[in-house]
Length: 412
Image (cartoon, rainbow, N blue to C red):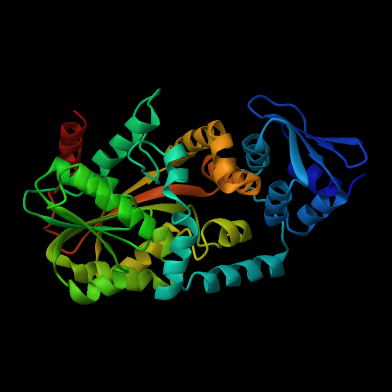
């Protein structure tokens, strides 16, 4: 019996996990069941097994990245999906890989790591977003939308779903000619350029990524909207100090996850100060179902240092301090899972280019990240929140009909 046998026999009940041990022996876990996959993994040495036993999440990731853990039949998406499907959040199951003390230590590390002062925020952004635009071009859609798409019908392409996402968000902004719009965390400029194309508005997009800034400026010029769409390398906290009351609308997509719990109230206070008296904001963020939690060690170390996925409760509580009215809340449950599966498929399809560009270990790390994120949205406690805020109760129409009408007009 291997050292992993007690752990895996407790976790894998449905589906089939076969483990090839370093000496060639085999152990099987679970019972085949409809809808549950079968996967075979192998260990090159006992080192990889010990790493998983000591820290199942980070240990499994690093064992896979270093080649101590290999996939014999199936892929990393199948393996992580099988584990997560056996511990679904919806049914109250959890992967209890740490005792109370370990979970408390992770909570503390997560909070301390997401304090995110200005200099650290810039470093964190560089870690993930300044690794090269060419990598992102290989797995994102043509507009380089690095956030949850909006899947309105079966059979959509990723490109169509991202167009639908932008239209969905634009409709919630209640755009009107002449408005000044701020895009906090503008990425490669796709949202800002789209908004300028949908309405006669001026947009300022801000980012902390030099790679994103350069490409966003280039794309705005190519689209012929550079006079109405500007981009700047600036922290939202510094912008709030100089641009108070300037913006009619604020949009922020996929940025709030990088703010950190320590700065939640600062973020909403800055947004409230940046808006006009009848301003409206649309916040699109990954969200944690249930109560607040902690960022896992793998994500903190390798993917999003300083990142934290907020619960809806702590997000709204922080916004209330600035007297922002939550005028509309939508929970996107499975949209990001569909998006991530597309990103994963495109990443795997471009394995040769990514390995040549970034190396084998990076490729394995990236696929582990995408597979783990997919499982979190399919079976874990993650979803997406779109929260519309207003400073005045009179800023928007009384019903949501205006959203549906505008969205239909935007997508044709």
